[in-house]
Length: 366
Image 1 (tube, helix red, strand yellow):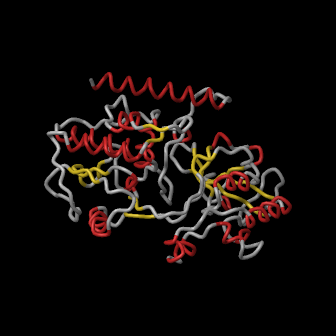
Image 2 (cartoon, one colour):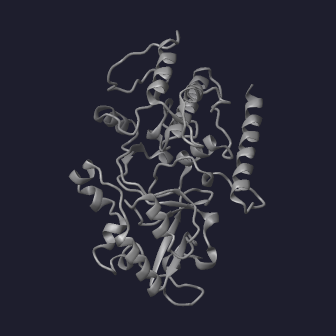
Image 3 (cartoon, helix red, strand yellow):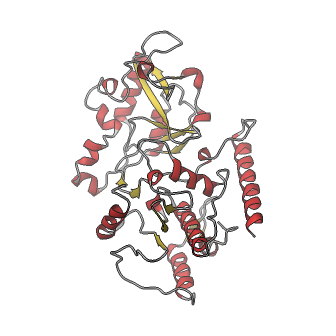
């Protein structure tokens, strides 16, 4: 972001507060610096008020956030053909390379289709131990809106709540073993946890049916009891909160423009990126590409080996049937070949490759 000329990164560095290795800011100072920079820019006119219409005659960036007002959300839904979504619960995502495949097998139920799922089989003893820890695990506080809205539980049932209905509930639900045989034993397992690919590169996998409200450490502990997931790297833990966002793979290109109206750009969490830096980076790219559109130039789309480019690729090409927001993580980047076993060395190599590829792209644009 700094190499691309971000306004917010210098503001963040100047307002940083001690937070170990993380970049944390004094929010009042940070927001004040960003606001002053915008209001004092002679090329920007700030108009305060609620936006209730989407312009039809100008290049426009919509950056309305994950809690877009009802009026504007309705207009966005109309513009996007109804592809406006929200999630109240989402399942964890793990990296493919962290799975112990000696304990898993790939297959679809009844052999239908390709080997689309990674299956983690459990025998009766493993399932019973997992079940007991799951129903007794510590949960995160539930927000008021969840209590008032029963669809939070019936529409996206947390796996720990479902489990409380009976010890065999999961075995007849998301962990049902019907139609699957463990090639190691030749028999049907007692229960099976299925992992479904989250991206086209198949580097990330979603735990099917594992929407959860467990605390993050509990998720790592309890879900780590699933065969093959003992050392899994969680790129996103399961969460429960409301978040309005586009079904971006059906709507947006990697330059954050609307496929059906190339003069409309979206930015921030509404695009399906999650996190402060991720949202700011999507706004940066949407802004750069809006200017390039105005000038009649080609869009700037960064390589998927960069974090910004990879997130843009994720929100525009995800193959998941249930698209959910994604934050920055090393799992979305194409793997380094040959594989580097040491995690720190692998992450350093991924970072170095990203910077080299970014510099190559920018050198051709300058």
